[in-house]
Image (cartoon, rainbow, N blue to C red; front, top):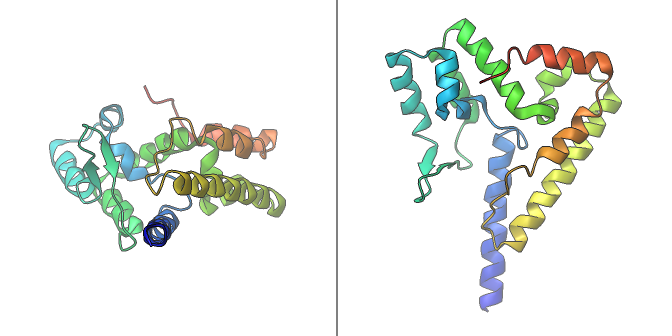
Length: 188
């Protein structure tokens, strides 16, 4: 009986996780998360009013894990689009553009899974399929890790790096150059 209850709990956790992952566009981190980083806030030159408003938005999804680390705490009813929109309204046009550039830098090849980025780079149907296949492989590995950990998923730093490199390998030389230009100046 304990096994059945544990199995049911794991399935429930996985279903919530899948719903949450769908909200964050299949493992593409939302841009607003970057606003929790001091170097990003400095680069964007946020004023006091913007800092206060952004903190209020981030506080709705960012929670301390008890060890001094901030964790994204989303539920199936969390609207990532509303949060992104809220942040976009707080930032100026140039700040939004810069945040986008920084986001591309942090996402690396993972950004290719975003349909807007794929379109901007001119990915072909075949390239999009390859990116989707890599993403599916990553999702499967995440699900396997979640099951093996009893639903207490914690991905090691750099987990996505190999998948991101595979995605970047899909690009042509011209697309790689365009992607690098979209990233703007490197974040310090």
